[in-house]
Length: 286
Image 1 (cartoon, rainbow, N blue to C red):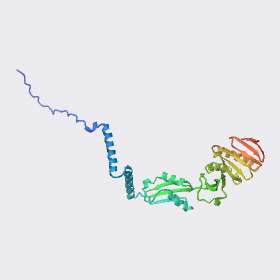
Image 2 (cartoon, rainbow, N blue to C red):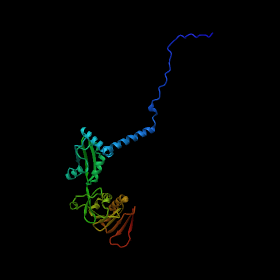
Image 3 (cartoon, one colour):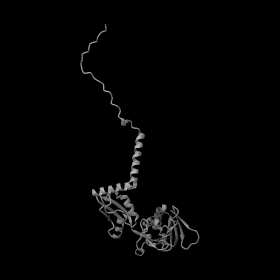
């Protein structure tokens, strides 16, 4: 006769193991489905733009217009473009305000200081400019006026040149007749290099008749007494300027009967006597 097992007395609660929850469906989403969905969304946008008789560019312009409206409503619209540093030239001040390209009511966030600075400097008549956004509604342009330093004859007429080698349109050359005179093609572009020579030889400036640009790469300085100072290419002009100052201090060559002072060879000075013919130049060691 089979034995019947009696029921065991419960000594405590029986712990039941819970089955793990099923893996969410989203965890098994196929990447290709995501890509397909994005493509479909883009297609819907393009189709919607076409149905509206517009394009993506029009949607973007409307979006940007919405941002401009929101910025204006929040008080971030340009109320004023102020130019400082040119109080003695109100005409140039107004011109820079115009070339800045910023209009009252424009979104302040769109007024990029770097872009505005490039516009102002490229307009000429200023040597430098700094642009600031004064929140919430003002653009400040601090400009330094360019300094006229020379007159350049372009083959037809005279032009005023500033310290950065740019012609200054609108200035009367006759009002700047005492400036250093330049000749030769592309002379303005080499003005900065020439000025470094003059700054090292201040006593030479009153004696200069004019400076001639040679081959668009170097200068010949013609003195009033007939002497020509031949300078090297702009890349070597600083050492030549120092050497010229040294020989002027030691021997005052520009005051003597010297037809040519040749500084084109680094470390050498070649002298040609006044009125001599041929290439018989006497070298002077440096």
